[in-house]
Picture 1 (cartoon, rainbow, N blue to C red):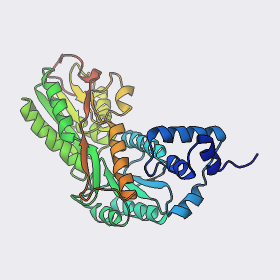
Picture 2: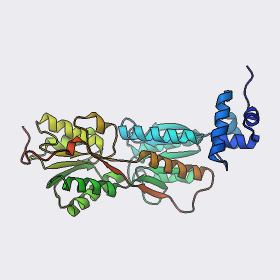
Picture 3: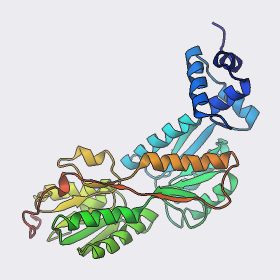
Picture 4: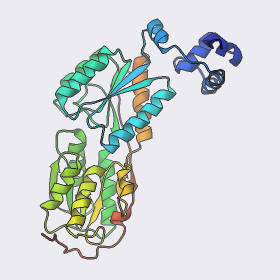
Length: 341
């Protein structure tokens, strides 16, 4: 069976070869209708583009690199999935690397992606401050967009969630559930979400009339939530966690200690990952709009790749939503509950 060429696709679709090429790569000026039509025709003919040949001719690899701090964290797994889908629609393939939340490893991963001649990089910085030099230097070499976190101020484009808005939603929800005392458990100042969410909840809790009786901050891990609950006695009316993974750790320790959620203590998370739905009762959490965030980050990156970027850095944050689950569903039954040691 003869190999189907781009010229065959163009003839069958009734367009020029140039238009067919732009439709297949998603680059240049071409309508959505034409893209869908040409790609449908190409699929029907069994056309398979020569990616290597395209890269050699255009000086482009049609690949984008992505560096995340913890690939096993469900939030980053879901973010990667959203990014991969969005990039595929624009004709790019994704290469993912894990920095293990280590700035030195992150610098190595960025260098490896540069050596692979990717067209651009999306990075969730490992640390605030420590990652700034490597991320900033890479942004000077290649189009780069920061996702979810920032390595520093004004060093590269950034797209993420509005952490302040999310914590305000949580505080207002708890205030409406007859909650009085709260504890915050979250990430430390090593990352911007760690800093921003803690500060945002401190402010939001005061505005909502809640009494913040304690704060435990370490890493965005299951262990952080578990450790925080193992040393907290008596428990407050509610525990507000900086992400779903921390909340899951807190939930496990509360359950082991014989504390009933939500009857004796309410519990909330942040991110809206699959973790929020696999516990019983389901977790009340802040749902990040990952599709919007990933789409905006991809758009910013592709604009830079194509040389159409604005003269100023992109700084875009999206409003999250409150996802109410069973962990805040009922009135408090025993606000004086404490751990069984």
